[in-house]
Image (cartoon, rainbow, N blue to C red; front, side, top):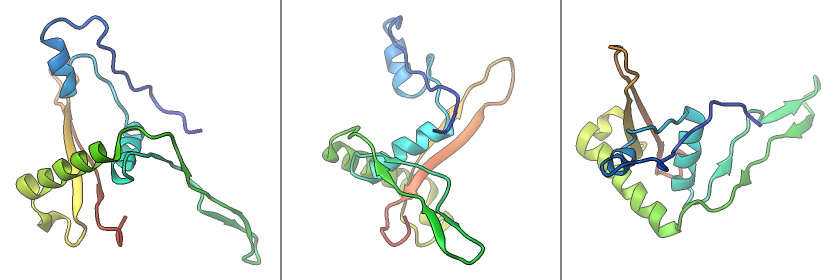
Length: 137
């Protein structure tokens, strides 16, 4: 597998307003890019994640294929209808806030985030998403 920092979503000690803050990525939430891409893949794939891999094809010096990377579906994360609703909301996020001119021809669905790091440091901004056009996955 691929080693990454652990994502954390622990609301066991959350007080009244903390649960609401955790729903928008605040409170004690921690995530990493690999985890976010797994979630995006699941939404794009109707609720079922696909296990990523690094190697597409290993060939000999003669061009013969020795090993070919294979995708593997994971266990369903959300209902297909939930994934479709999330996909629609993420598509709306792009068309209403950013416009398709930033991603010509891709029909991008995306979510942005801001990670507050504290200590007077500037926050980290990020964006994660996928193309909803099957011709440009």
